[in-house]
Length: 243
Image (cartoon, rainbow, N blue to C red; front, side, top):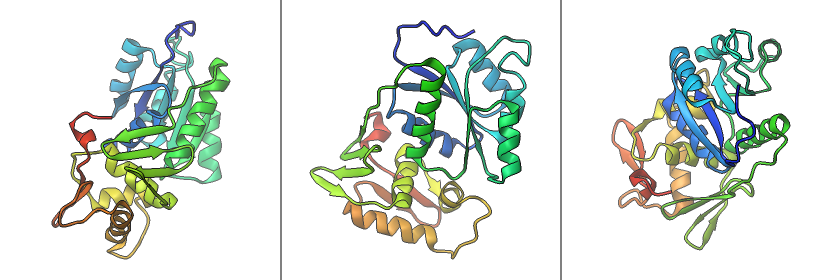
C-alpha cells in the first residue's frame, strides 16, 4: 500500500504510454504541479515501477497496456496495490468511456488532449483521493520562454504572446521534446490524432504561425529549427537541462 502519511509534498505519477513524444508532454505539464513522473512503455515495465516506486497516481493509455494494468492494481491482481488512475484513450465514444470507468479509472480524457485540461484533471483526482490541495507552479521557464498554464500566457522576455489553444499545445509538444527531432507525422498524431485527414502543409502552417508569434527567424532560429525533409527540433536551453 502507498504510504499516504509521507510529509513529502511531491506526488509520484506513473506514466504508461508507448509514445515517448506524448509522455514528455505529460511530464512537462505535470511539472506545473508538485508531481514527479516515471515513464513506462509496456505492462512489465509499469509493474516494475509500481513495485519499486509506489506511485500515488497513474496516467495511462488504455490502448497501450492500460487495460491490463487496471487488472493488476487496486487489489484486483492480488498485489494489494491501490492508487487512482487518469486514463487516456484515442477513442472518445461513450462505450469506451463507460467501459473505462467500469474497469476502475477515476477520470478519462480523449487524445489529443490540452495540457491545461490534463493538469486540471490530475490535480482534481489527487485532491479527491488524498484530501490535500496540490500546489501549482503557474510559470515554467524554458530558456527565454515562460509558460503560464493557468492563465494560458506565454512570454518571451518581457513580451507576452497570445497563442491559440492549438498553438500552445504545439509549443508544449516541441518544448517538452527539446533537442529531439519531431517529424510532421508525429506532430499530426499528437495534435489531431492518427485518423485525422488534413492538407499536407497543415503542420508547417501552424509551425510558421507559432514562429511569427515567437519572433523566431527561421534563418537564425532561437527556438524552432527546421530539419529539411524530416521535421522540427526545439532548441531552447531546456535541451541542456535548464528548466
